[in-house]
Image (cartoon, rainbow, N blue to C red):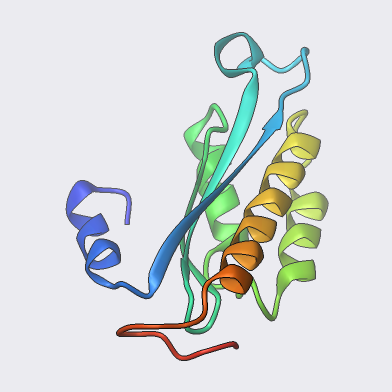
Length: 128
């Protein structure tokens, strides 16, 4: 889902939304001078809460791919605690605290949006 052509199915499915969360990076992290904040973005299928794609502003490709492998396929409705626990247990980088905070903010954004908007339109199946 990283190439431009890979995003098309996400855009064509009205049941997939994009949520983001940000957290302040520690001053000691290499990317702090460039970004100051770490971002996490999740593409979520609202029908079942499944994370269909994930990205982060972590500096290296390996860290980004590792993060994706930790969270993609999990459900933000059924696996919320597991998602955060996985990242806290398995990501031991200096940005770990900021990554977990940004991830929690994504999850909160999804649940706030879901609570504010009743399920409507194609692909909507109501609360999961």
